[in-house]
Image (cartoon, rainbow, N blue to C red):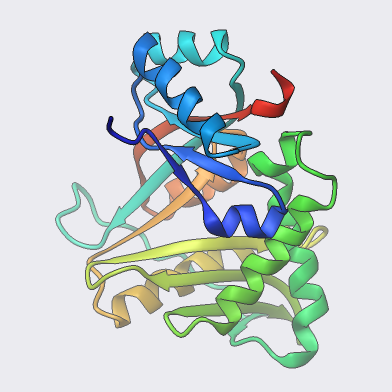
Length: 247
């Protein structure tokens, strides 16, 4: 039998219980029964399912079998060439300085990372402990600060950190924005625009031909920012969680 479920070791170790991912985006009745059987044999407590939004049967089956919709995931792409129209380069306020992180920034950057997590599926799914989402986003930031293929850019106003953007060179062609956020109370001042522009510049210096970012449908301000900076929606998916110990 083809495996329909994969154990996610990192997630399982981080959250402290067994978590798996459904390996397909479309399901029928037989596959649903088979994957739930596999998940139970593997001792999973939570199961992620990223469903094709165009497949009505998968959506109906997910709802019937107790999967809960926790996110609508949107992937946006910014091609650097072959565009239908030029992308305007937005001016950066002279009050905003973009640079690398400093050791003294850690606490503020962690607070910004936690704020970024407020729209994530881990925050909206009450099956996870209340501290799970803040811990996850602090860990995500720490990984970006330490990983050799990542760069974290920090925006400052009056020498105080007010925003961050974490970038990853996925491959020779694609750069990915993995975390981006502006400190509460500092939004609406062009900080997000400055950070995204700095990320796009960094990707192009690395030789990438496109950039991509994943965000949530509920995060409309982020979508508007990326769209005005030249990103197009590439794909979307419906993200479900299933708690097997609640059956």
